[in-house]
Structures are given as C-alpha cells and as structure tokens.
Length: 91
Image (cartoon, rainbow, N blue to C red):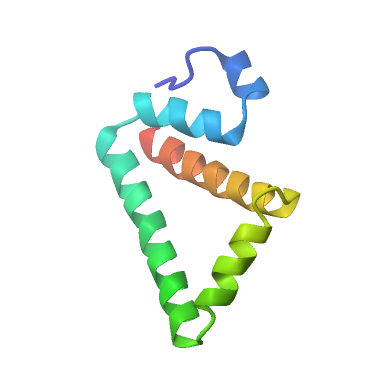
C-alpha cells in the first residue's frame, strides 16, 4: 500500500504536513489508536508535573518557547514518530 500521493511531496513537506496527509489516507483505526497513545503519554506527563508541583512552571515554559526552535524540533519529532508508527502498521 502506498500511502503517499506523490513520493516527492514527502521529501519537501514538513513532518506536520506528512502526518496530516498520511492520517487522511491510512487505516482510520490505526490512526486513532496512535493518536490515543499520544494523548495517554501527554496525560502521564501532565500527571507527573502536577504531582511534582511543576504545572505552572510548565505553562510558563510553554509560553516562552512558542517560537523556540527546540520546541519546534520536539513537535516535529512527535509528528515523525506518529507517521512512523502509522506507516509501519499499514504495511
């Protein structure tokens, strides 16, 4: 199964673009399962922050990093991970 409309698009698009493109054409159950896993990871991370009293520090850091390259890199890594997880299960 080729989930890319055009192989060249994959090479020039962003990880976010790739994720949304693949999520529209891949098996819906697999996409939903991977998104659910990502939300579970987020919930665990938030719980750890709350238990350690760091939720305000986290919010402040998020606000200050909106334009930071490091945040963009981390976000792209998550999109890449999601794409990899979806693609490997659709093969």
